[in-house]
Amino acid sequence: MTHALHWQKSTFSGGGEGNTCVELAATPTTLHLRESDTPNTQLSITTAPLAHLIRGVKSGHPFHPTA
Image (cartoon, rainbow, N blue to C red; front, side):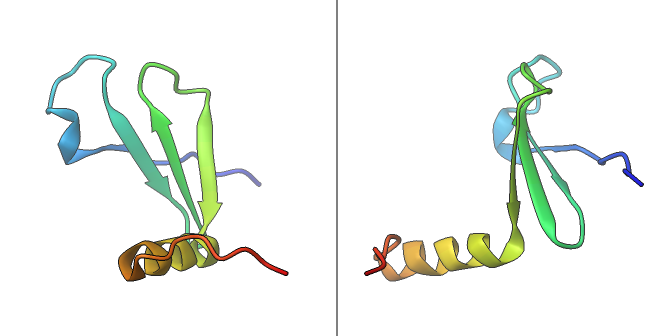
């Protein structure tokens, strides 16, 4: 069963009503991003890889190649 996502505009989008906003929707395990001018194109990521990326960026080493 697919649930409708509740999209929220970023506060960094200038607060305008036009199609120039970054929007975010979340489920318990996945974050979804899209631009309001292309709502059918979405980037989705689960929370574990996103947390890993954020920790890496904060540490100054976002990319760790695997051997």
